[in-house]
Image 1 (tube, rainbow, N blue to C red):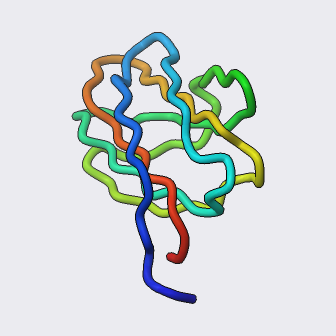
Image 2 (image 1 turned 90 degrees about the vertical axis):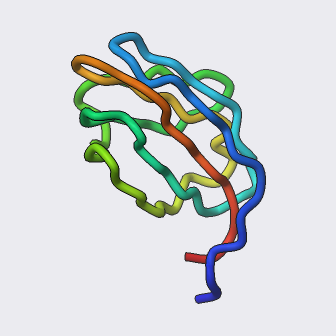
Length: 94
């Protein structure tokens, strides 16, 4: 597979209440960066998305790349405590 080719980046504020952002629906891959000092949980959705503490975890300081469901145009994040910046860049490749 080709190297990751980035598109637009969504910036979210991860905290104890779910927050969401719009991402490119046609991008098959996202690169997630957790800049918080705590674990962040995320989920993809269409139209709306609400994250829960049982969703996919991303450790503090982690940079991860995930395939996302085709057509998903939202990402939502939440933390159990604390918070900070969380970035989601939609694109192609790995």
